[in-house]
Length: 87
Image (cartoon, rainbow, N blue to C red; front, side, top):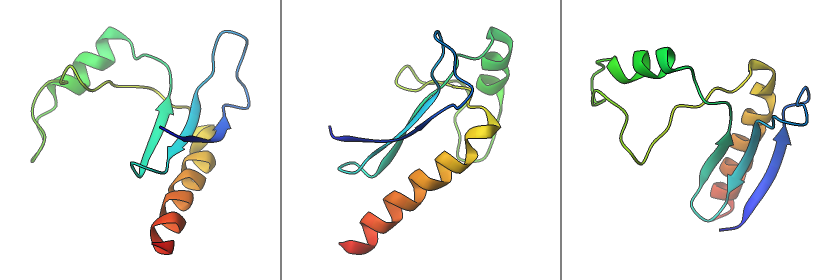
């Protein structure tokens, strides 16, 4: 896997590092964030939405990303779109 680093939370401390990467090969965003509280994770798992199974599969996770990182996530989306347009 070849990850392209996009950015890290500008307010990150020594113990925290919410981060955004792009995986060009798989055309995916890769996000590192904080683990949610058990209550938030339970709330997400309990949601019943069309096309969305109740619960969180073992292969998935809920993560929290600070809103101040929205520009980094947009940049990561732009990187993926540009790469896709070149093909």
